[in-house]
Image 1 (cartoon, rainbow, N blue to C red):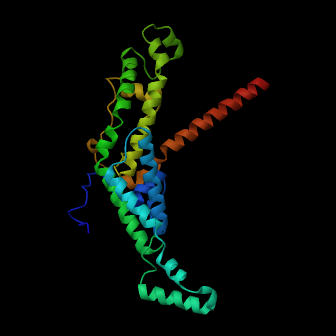
Image 2: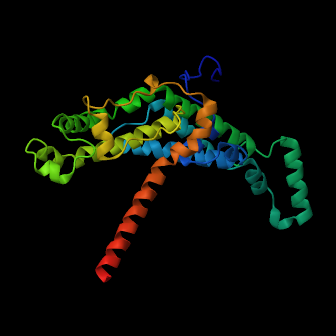
Image 3: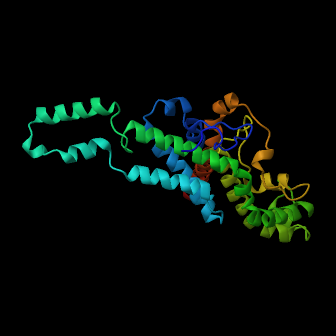
Length: 290
């Protein structure tokens, strides 16, 4: 049996190990609300956010750490087990029993086992799954530096291209007219969208890893996104790939308040962009009809 003290992975400074806070961070939910939900809900939502970030990493060429995969395999096996109450009912000849007799058998079973059952459908099973899930998140967090470093092959070339554009004189507020009139800037202007898209995608993924592994965020901190943000970030050279363990530590009390707002920043930005485009289309339509 694993030793709770010697076998526990090291928890980096600035992280919270609360599964409720991890799920709240990624989903933009209230951790207090999640804390009041059933163990089954906690397991399902926790698995959802963890498997989502692992799938996202896999799409970017970063494999799931074996320690994390092993724990997820245990949870999957646990969830596949029939509940104790289901096994008990299956052993009864219900078609030959009166309703009262079936209810009595259920009550006798519950009294004898103290908990409903030890399978995935009962409290013991859910508690075990929650423990394993927290351990899996901790294992991923302990390896966050290596996981994020796996994105470097995509990050560094993109950051270098944006840095070249910045070195050529391209800035956040450079207009198309200014770029096209400058022979030094124009080739960078025409080529910058591709590396910016790569950095946007990787920054989003890094923030997701930071959220799910419980690293704190400063108030108002949000992923960098768009040409302007990356030209600013690369003004003095290629922007460095974030290293989780080198981030300043932020207290759990502060990050607990900020998590939902920060986690929801990507969605809000997307909603704002969609609303702006819809508004522009409406104005264009009115102009055409005008």
